[in-house]
Length: 576
Image (cartoon, rainbow, N blue to C red):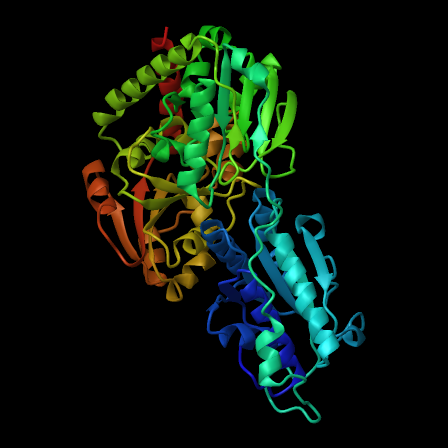
């Protein structure tokens, strides 16, 4: 931190930036604006914080979301006053619902310039409502030691809330009077000597939050013969530790593990002897769903996306134990559930050693092998560019130790259905908090920024919903490949009952935008290639690239909807 300032606003903003740095902030996303100038200068001048300028606040929010998802650290997000604040809201909602730490710094006019048509002024107090873990308005800057101590403590506390066990976004509303730029201010004198300043932040450090006590599951679970472990979407900061703890838990119980593709287990769960990926196909067979009715369900984190699985659990109303490090209610089945606070990354869970026979688990494993064999046989000879094979192919063709971002709508479902187990680890990221298609490109760019090679699986509408995200390519440092499934509209609606109503379906649900994505890519300076064969795609996935590129796979959503339904029927019927 520097030791001289032109005015009180500059000092005030520098204390904010240094305090946040001491609490773990390594990135600050700044959006252009005058009122936020003191904050922009502070972050841009901080030697240990990378300040990334992004034009569009909506895109900036999602870029910050992606950065925070990948790093597990809070990311600062800066904007000016007025409607700029509102553009953060979609990303704040997703961060809140999925538990991602963001520190929102919204600049504001001082109290005397509010509610009087001073311009670019709205009511920003508690603007984000219940979607932030804490909201605080700071005082108007003063340069006394007492006020700077207040500032340091307030900012530190808010940052700690963002990274507490029930982590998520927090909001600091920061009013400033003129001057907003670092020009000399009459009468300003620094309250610190250099020696005093060096010790002002010494006590601050990254908080680990409230430590978890190692959880103990009831001994009664050891006698259960038909129990299942169900694992939903998750992007743990320490994947290896998380996977090892899940494996230890599952192997001790001896239960099958039904793992969504949106967590690391399908690509980093080789320690689990009873991993099941094809549960959706298995449970579509009515006789098997009845045969496999469990006595107990152990949910880790949240439920998978599969509606078939959720319905199966809900209809049977079996006892459920939910292991989670968050306080949110994740039981959408309204079962007889009990929540156990546990952190599978660090604390782990003590599980009783199974005393029951492993017949039930072996049955699941046998059925899943059949599913995977049927899918391999079907897709290995499929030459047509169909969406189902793309998700299957990613489990075979993605390079080792990369990241995969999965959009919402149809991609997470295809991943759950078709992405099979693999040996090489892949870090999977998704936005399954609010499940919206907004901000998908910006989030993926945040995940990929200064990280490992990243691939984004997205549809055409989700990509178009966030076209401003492509502007971030100028600031982007890393490797991002956009796997664009262009099915000329909303493919997921083809799987829903509304598709029967042709008179309104295509115009209001299909919504083909007829965009030339080659030209779109050129507009933003992105590399582009049209994929015309699976061999071509496999080759492209193996290439090391820098920057952002688009690989477009054109598909037929109506044909794919028919193929999905037929595949469900064929595979399920072959299970017996």
